[in-house]
Amino acid sequence: MNMEHLISKRELLARYNISYGALYRWRRKGLIPDEWFIKKSTTTGQETFFPEKLVCERIELIQEMKEDILLDELAKTLCGENQKHEFVILDTEFGEKSFRLCDIRGIYLVDNQGYKTEITDYIKSMLNKER
Image (tube, rainbow, N blue to C red; front, side):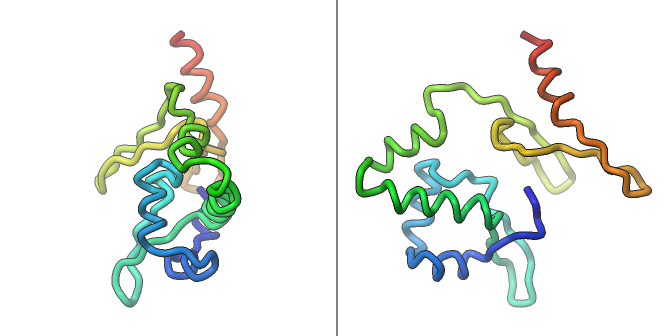
């Protein structure tokens, strides 16, 4: 996720005129993935931020479709409830964070000189070799 383009929870709720309760109900139903809820320290304390592009697209889709389809059905469609997902788990001194592989746009190694090497396809090919 690109951390440069984050939107705060406050801005998100105001932009789409949704309640705090609705946002967290959508989270519980799996409509908005847990990993999109990013806690960051700010001068006023800890706040929640989201990857702006991803969460805005998802909220627009939810608002557009919630009149025509039950939220549980929409969650099954968005999350592929009937499918098993592969995950990447990052284990750091701050705890574990897991990401569904299908949600990852890119995985990069960055050396001490700032050179980025993309390893997404390598990770995916490792999974295919195991089968």
